[in-house]
Length: 611
Image (cartoon, rainbow, N blue to C red; front, top):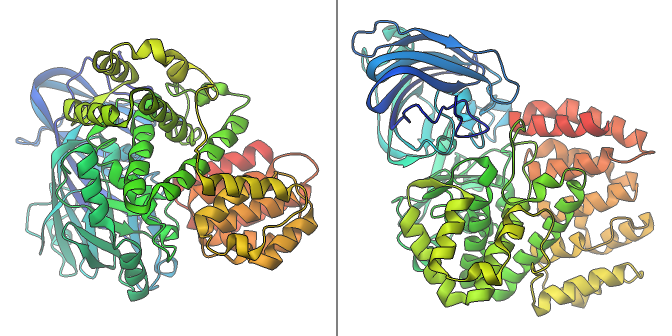
């Protein structure tokens, strides 16, 4: 076997699927989906075909025209990869697999009505990155295998569905279209409806996405609707926060070339969504925590928009090269933010990222492999080592190239890079070869090997230079000497300024300093979670137990890993904090049912390591 990806059973000597046709029957009472997966290969193939699965019950594997069974085997369970499904083919171009998800599928979160805003109807949504598509349907679950797809979603009539695909129609179910996922009488029930979608551009499987629930939307631009649960306050707040989306798309097109995905819709998910955003093509998924009331949440949208070029158009071949997705996108996001919101805001953004990168060096000090851009993740769960390194060190590398050759030349290089590799999956060597071919002599000016294969932060990485950034860092340094910022010094600060200030404070401060800071500026009550969580980390470090009620409330009301990871880690790491460890365990036990399975796993790993 010749694997193409340390996180997939896919064999490089086997053909890669070109199209997947999916038929889904959603059963909310059992939190399961019955699925028919029709896989199409580029040419007739004879021999074994290996697919990825996880926690799927495989009913049958069939030749789609005759419905005659095809021989298949399932491997032993691998704790990271799941199970390989090997099908024996004889001159076949298509196979049909009938399967069913399990209620604990790692890609799916099923919300009961009480866990939604309206508390009337259930809700389900996906998160397939990095390696979770295989827990919905069997596939070659590697970004090396780009596929087009079509999907029919049979759902309760009172709900609606959205996907990372073009919506074809919403219609009554039709007899015998269910491909065997259930009886015709069940498929065609009076209380059911079919939503049909098609994705006509080849995407990596981790970009497969759907959400089903009681959904509404607001129009915010010619290419953009904001979807969310059908609650006016949620939709109106989202529409205000993301009103500038079309301007950002136009800036992106000027910088990086045409927007190739037609629509750029946004879906605001329930608070349990584990990431800030997920760049699913045509339908970006967002956490409600990005709705801050001051349009600064648009920066997460800028990041997901930038993925439309870097990540979705050009994709890392596997997770060892994740920086190609995220470093490029972080660079592209900051260029969009600079054009739309100004250089000072972009510099704050870079400064916050720099602090995050420095903190990751501390996190990985015992395993510096994961401070490299090109990593070796064989035998490692990508969710366990997800960090800011590919984002911020990747950004720093590209920023270093820009400083070397100048922005106009780098802009030309970026456009050419995107045009050359669009709709392809590439690795670090392919990028470096392209860089050296198009910027002759660059390897003599920048140590490319040190940047991509070295650990830590290279000496030619750089903090941002801006007056506002320097002022905030200097005020944070003065806090160490006991001086709190005056009200006139912070009068125009929004969330980002406070976030940068808190990130630059010393990790150990006196409890009295923490309470004094909060008494003056009420940071523990901030509606901006970045600010609130930054302050609460400080409070936990200082053992200000008066704030543990706010810590508990925060850990129970959001499931975004950006907040869960630092709060749980600060509570449990180190010695002499038995009370905090007991507290963290109790809160997790009470809150974990409201977290997405990916976030549950990350929090459990932190507690297992330290508590």
